[in-house]
Length: 153
Ligand code: FES
Image (tube, rainbow, N blue to C red; front, side, top):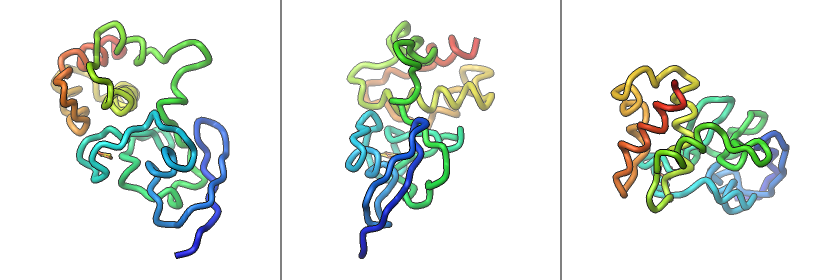
């Protein structure tokens, strides 16, 4: 299988990589672009650690090929903060201890941002439902929900 040139717009900047067409978006981020904030848990769409936004909607980056995401706006955890100012969801995770080991946190935060933005944080139950694809082995769920609740206002 041949290597091809891919252009990906990530956090506002177009980046080029040379990769095989079968490379997932997750591997493109981590292995080709050194954007290791996006985590690989299961690599099979079951844990949510790899959650990023594509054109403002969350996706599991392990379940899509990088080649399919050309021309779209990809946002990773590295793109959330504005300079020194953390995103409100990042601040809320700090305030409410929304993590323990931290491995699932980037995915949780990306899902949490989408949860509020897309109007799925109307109640804790709604938030839990929306966030149910993001697993936390430490069991920080109540604090994660508290963080989302705070941002949802
Ligand atoms: Fe993509 Fe687990 S690594 S859902």
